[in-house]
Amino acid sequence: MMPVVHRPPSMLYIIPTPIGNLEDITLRALRILKEVDVILAEDTRTSKKLLNHYEINTPLRSHHAHNEHGTTPNLIVEMQAETTMALISDAGTPGISDPGFLLVRACVQAGMKVECLPGATAIIPALVVSGLPCGRFYFEGFLPHKKGRQTRLKYLATLDCTFALYESPHRIAKCLKQLAEHCGEERQAVVCRELTKLHEEVQRGTLPELSAYYEGRKVKGEIVVVVKGE
Image (cartoon, rainbow, N blue to C red; front, side, top):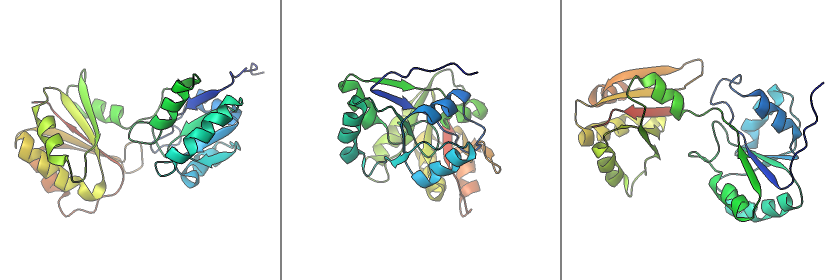
């Protein structure tokens, strides 16, 4: 018989969810998703697939980048009335290049407990599998599309530690070319695509070699670029 869990009132759980393989979720995460009163999801359609797979019937609500400014104050009021909630994103850990920061900050300011479970994220597996030094690293997230992009690229090129960033499939070749222009043609890098999924791909080489590999190629899926430091 499982022990009775007494949940504290005014509580927000941050729950990492699989970045591809549905088995990459902890037993504790599954238990909490079943116990909370409400699950806040970046995309309820995507999250429903995971919840249905594990037969989790907790009420689901939408909480994403386009509505979080409006929904956060009401969520705080609900949690203050002893509604326990869990926040999940489409994949990985909420708040890491995904919605979550605003709600966490509001909870902290309101004096409510926030607990983040350890779990899936694309950045750590990419760093480890890259074979590049990762005892110390810098995470950029997504580069700006236009304004400020060149400034960020120039900064990244000066780092003496491995750095990693996220990129979309249709911009990957351009991104690698720009990185080569700023970091130099000999800089080693690794592109990790679709980590944990059926068509997982890890490509290694210099930045120009990787740019050439992806140029004109139809690419799908989530991508992490890992670049050796200066």
